[in-house]
Length: 257
Image 1 (cartoon, rainbow, N blue to C red):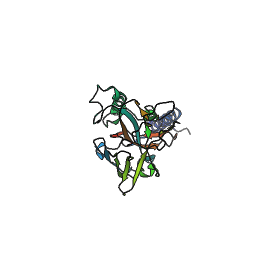
Image 2: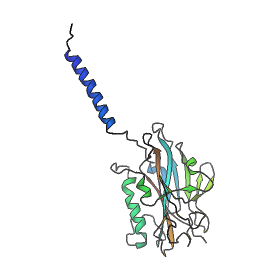
Image 3: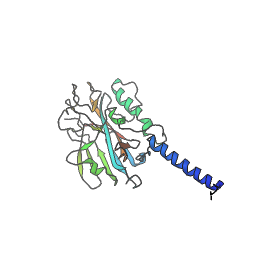
């Protein structure tokens, strides 16, 4: 005896087939889950002139299981300005043009209200920003997803390397690097100690020398522009995931002598 297909059964079967079809289309088209990471709240960072910054990074929720921790990116500039509190204020100084351009380019990225710009693997490498390192200590252990508090300190004393002071009382000298996210560039560090100290060697120009230093010239003063981001890894394709960056400060490098 042939059973009749009732209206309710027909609707249920149609819904099931539509669900299957939509799932198949999304899978075949390669539409992937969007992996978001929270931005470091700007209120957690307090900069003091061009000398220091107190930074608190919170523990990252297990909701973001693909998070790895935090990274700090930097770039060094030479300029004729003895103090820089806002690089967008003095628009007449030609030696500050690159610093002003980079700072302005990151304004939309750092703005929490702007959701149209996305940080990618080329955001920092494309502008020759590099990841901050520490002497004799793995900075990734400090900037883990467990969260921490630290101070970046640039001294006025000639020859004294800038440091990170941890909330545990330890102090580590800042070091330059050639790593920018997934990009590693091969170039010569001059001087070889990689310290953040203003010197004639740091201001050297030449092929494949100090690619983390911009606007090398006869200018007397050197500054480091720094941002912090939350980082993770897309579990589907193992590509990096970044939050929106947060501005830390513009630090003035101490003189070598």
